[in-house]
Amino acid sequence: MLTKQRHEEMVNIIRERGSVTTNEMAKILGISESTARRDINFLADTGKVIKVYGGAMFDPQDVDTKEDSFEQRMDINATEKGKAAEKALELITPDDFIYIDAGTTTKYIADNFNMNGVRIVTNGIEHARILASKGNEVVLVGGNVKISTDAIVGTLAVNTLDKYHFTKGFFGTNGISSKAGYTTPDINEALVKKAAMQKCSKSFIVCDSSKFNTISAVTFASFREATIVTNLCPAEFSKYKNIIVY
Image (cartoon, one colour):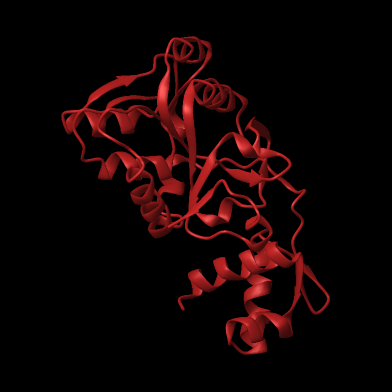
């Protein structure tokens, strides 16, 4: 297992259990205690877990308000995002009228889209360019350009979306919580996501498993308003029926 993969698995384990000792982590992953201790120190230093005596714990109530740029996020968990997008593509049929949210995971949907007859609306600037270059019928929502996330936001975007009725919508998220729902750092993006999701017959959150048990600043939908398409379902979420694991 690569170091990056091990770190992600460690974070998921700590999220699932709430807290884990160094000894327990070593046994679960089949690594030495010194390696487990070193990894926990790294994860604590990067703010992904809280280091405690003899191990680590996770605080799901911590609110993550940081918003990395589109370029910074593209390479994070790229394999997992790509596979989640491929699974999401299987849910689309030729007669669909779909909405594709701006974001890095949903960009993989645009990158791999290969179907005729589907009409598409998006607030993702690069998404629209990619999809249109493949000969698709694409509408880019009007509004204010947000450079950092390559998205269209604002009142005009929200008002435009109110006119549509989508068969399916595919959305990104910064956080997933059973209590806080789906969250994002920016109120302007949250308003567009919320407006679009309310106009979809079926809504899908397409993401990698690192988004579980993370809460960002603004909720744009409740947990049961969408079906999640992801690579791994944490144990505490296994009771929910609105999760598709590829």
